[in-house]
Image (cartoon, rainbow, N blue to C red):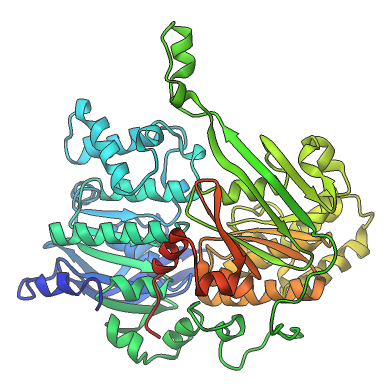
Length: 580
């Protein structure tokens, strides 16, 4: 049964809807004239009801929600239609009236957590600002209430995180802070724009369960904007599918997932990772990547010495906000436990064979990204050894490693394809950057030829090479990042959540591309992810981490089918699957 059913049944359907949107059309002024981002959208939402809006990037999901909140940028305007919230005509209301509604009566979880947070203000103070402004909390009580909000979204060590700045927190932690800000005032309408992007599956479940609990307590209406069909199936009463600014299908969640009517809805469902399917099954029916090598029936036997050996790796950081330094300065005794360094990675050991894909999975803060950064030599280990092709690269000073012959052999694909590209570089310049920096000797026509060859390998048409990042789609930017990573023919590529920011259909293409490149070029992968279904399809072996330690490792198929650790079973049981 849908987790929201009992809430929906409790709503009084005789009352007028809390939110009523009729024939909404939104236009943006551009140099080439007006562009319609949303056209003739209709939706109603009752108290205690959850509506899921699904679709790919550019479908109009976020523009619709921004219009409801009336936070469109200056180029956007409501061309047609009406928006009524709690009896208030939002489209024609004064700015002061709408400002009074935002935060207290309607609130939003924004998609990009780092952009939504003030980078030079502690996160605890930012939560206090919301409480004081919208619920008139007393400054003397605000700190305690802010910490309670952090605890509600399962922030580890909330008293310590209260003093942290956004740049000191991981992407998943920042996402939780933004969720805490939105839920702090317990609004009547919560608009969640991709609220669980960057979160691990257990935290995703905890956050969505929290939203359900608040909806039950306050009869709160929720709009969930997502490309995760499993999430929409588990938590939404109704689902609205958007494509190119229009609603192509709208029905109850049960009806849409049982018998989707529109071809676009069926395409999204096919591209969603789920148990029992392979990478090729994610692609649109009849699609096979050009010149793709056949998928291996089983993991090939690895011969020779492993490419990477990690032994007893440890990474420690000084704790923030413990007050140890001030205690010494003013002659007070410090708490020895509070002043002890935080151990992000705690004595782990593993190997990566040549031509093998190894998955690193676990919750945010488990140490998987820290481990990958140490392997990349972007962070220095506190102790332990990192042997790459027999050489202890962990003992090399960073400057020496950057100039060594090992640097080109280990490359990285970053988590966010947009933030990882220089906005002033064309795609060709971005791909050429490692070739120019690592002294390959290529220049002029030879350099351009190599860039075009790499673009061909990742399926990027050459006409896009002279475009800047803002002129490329998310999938195209991901291809540029992959081409840049393989430009120097590396032996090992570290992939840090490379598809987390992509739509499911684009993710399907990128995952197949990565598999094909690995087989074709003989590379090894370390695939860092919290998406266990993606890891199952792409990785030969998997390591499950928790609190800086390895709790389970083995062949991916075996770990997924019969996990031995309770924590692994908890991760697997938390994955939302659409009933396809």
